[in-house]
Length: 330
Image (cartoon, rainbow, N blue to C red; front, side):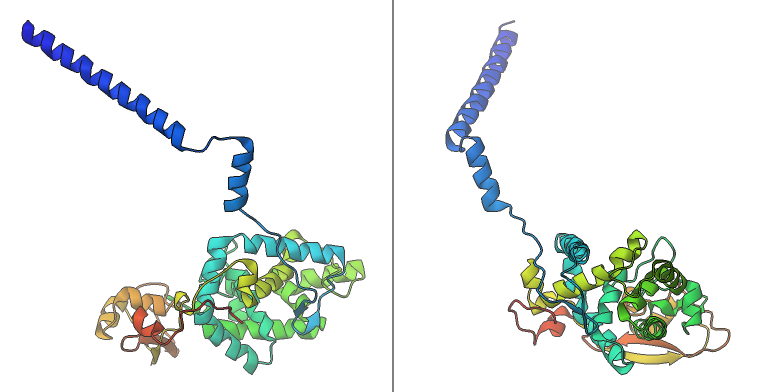
């Protein structure tokens, strides 16, 4: 009985001490933390959380033509896309990092095909420079539908889809856009056609007696589309102006590869990658046109496969010659 009473007294003492410690802690915190007055709170918010309106240059050109920024509807449409991109931080940062890997390939093809360099930002607006699939089943960086891709020379086999081949899909996109430029005599309208189709753009222009993108009334997606392309151009040419700071070593660099040609069916790509001395995951990442674990090439088409060069996948090796200062992508 004495033992039970003693145990009960110890339990009460422990509870009392715990409550005292909690009360003392609350008292100390109340003394050390700043009082939560409205003015102090507003001051803290002002010091630590600030947002700014997206800066719009006095003059903006797209594909060599100045856009009519003095028009209030044009200015506000561009501001909407700039603001959305400027504050979509994670996506915009990833796009800025991917650009050094993909832009050199795209730029060289655009130049060779006589297409304005600004068109590279169409790929950004389409996919964020990532191999994605849209709800309408458009695929790859340039977001080709299957029917359109075949029309513009992109091969699709069992286990193989050239919508995911950056060089070939870029070339197909330039062909499409050059055709639409001939139709509309304007790159902005050609881009609008890339989004909604030539017929839709032509019909709306005729119905409205309009001859340019900036005065065209159209569906929401197409009405925002070219402004989104231009907004990406502004942010990516001057990232620091829009709050994005990074170093060259933070960007994703081109990966040196060796090109090989295959013209037969490969039934086991796991074994093929192993034979090439490449981990299967690395092999697939370098060859996004491969869409399965086998390629059925019944007509013996010549397909390009890429294998990493020695040390090509070493981050230290890829970035060893890069300066570490903050940079702007231009």
